[in-house]
Image (cartoon, rainbow, N blue to C red; front, side):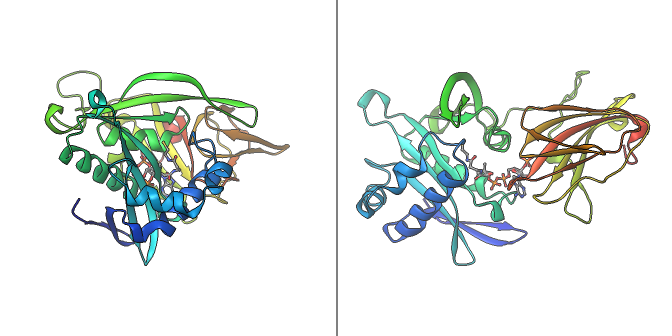
Length: 310
Ligand SMILES: CC(C)(COP(=O)(O)OP(=O)(O)OC[C@H]1O[C@@H](n2cnc3c(N)ncnc32)[C@H](O)[C@@H]1OP(=O)(O)O)[C@@H](O)C(=O)NCCC(=O)NCCS
């Protein structure tokens, strides 16, 4: 694979196939991923950390043959992302590969590095005769699922109870994408409404309103899209930050898409995480604080009168 450079607002990021000289960076990124995101991967940190140095060297030495083809992102002299493509070895399955080990450290997220790594892996697959790429992603991993959809992956099922961690069971969404000779049509399905009454809008096409503390709001659907009564927004709250402490006459209906934090009331606070729906009645003081280490994203619905910039 030819090296490629992604221009981001933090500077240029180089994406290339990992080489034997990247062994330390590979080990470091993989262990960091498993340690910081135990609920995102089937592998576990303790087992991976116990592997001897030769394990990592061998994997990179044989990358793309008996070991997965690995791709690494580098910027400012350090590794800032990893992704792999593990090809089936049996003769009747060599057209198929699995996308694995995608990871971007939190300081480098939201810049398109993850997407560029996935595309590098898909390009490599196309050139080496892979025709279908599959992956499994935990159902709560909203940012990763959206990234895979942007890269042309579609779901084909859900595998129940794949991960059991700290007393909790996690299902995985199975996704696939055809590449190379078998890919047909556009990589990303068309999702705008055309003549139809139904409108589908990509949230990544919506420019955010940015507040001083790093909080971002996207007004996804409102009167400009033909919704006369309700406005749907997403709010992104970075770690350590909060939405304003305030009240208003209308109620809020919120739903947590990613991250974790607390819903704050005058008499206390309650932990919230992915999958929680929160109703704030009208005239109740409230805010939402991100107490986690990842971006907190939630849907926040208001009536038309509740949005200054619908
Ligand atoms: C999933 C992951 C690789 C995405 O990498 P990335 O380089 O941030 O990807 P992108 O730049 O395309 O951004 C993806 C989304 O993450 C959001 N995001 C998540 N954390 C962010 C942060 N700290 N800062 C800014 N944006 C962030 C972006 O807003 C973007 O949202 P959008 O899809 O609504 O536009 C990365 O979040 C990660 O490493 N997660 C932990 C490991 C993991 O889950 N791996 C996948 C296993 S299947």
